[in-house]
Image 1 (cartoon, helix red, strand yellow):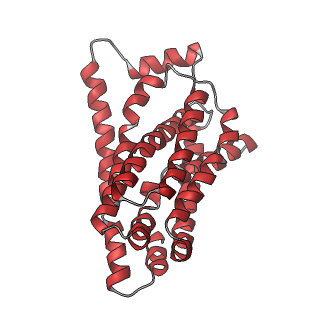
Image 2: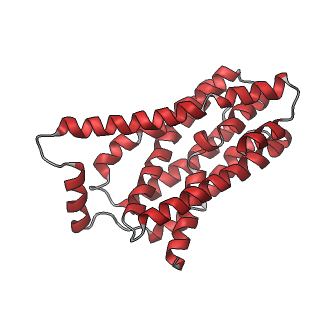
Length: 249
């Protein structure tokens, strides 16, 4: 594997673990929100669900901007928004404000996730880079699930959002290596892919809906574990770190 491919796997793997917290760190965030902020389990899960929903819906406008706006500009704006959203989450102490902040942040997180896939698709070895990125993302997520509960017990769930904000800010220098994404040849290829013929808009919408259904199906299989983990932690008298570590395995 070339050094370029290795660096791309490292960047996109780490970045995907940072900008997808509602899916990867859902058990920690739900348990930490309940224990630190005093939210009910239902309210904490509602915040996570809203963020997941907005993250998934961000893929719809991506069908428009991917061939019209410079990818670097999109990456900078979305990454800065994620940084601000995570730091703003540290200051939230009510369900309403945290729900609003995480929903807005989720839109920019979903934008970045869509952008990462678009960039990977332009590489000479997209399958290898995507598989390596996915493996690294899951590894970082497992490490986070193992260590975040210890830190939350001492410093609160705000620490997780603060760490995510700092990590997102660290992603900014790597954006310089992104392709512009607005060169004529790529726009022509992407336009043919996204708009096969002017008379088939229903096919494009059906494809978008199908993608969203797959995302929601994946999320729905994972999301219910979050309140269950917190219930096991509180009702069974087990340490949150122990429960989440078992989940991460």
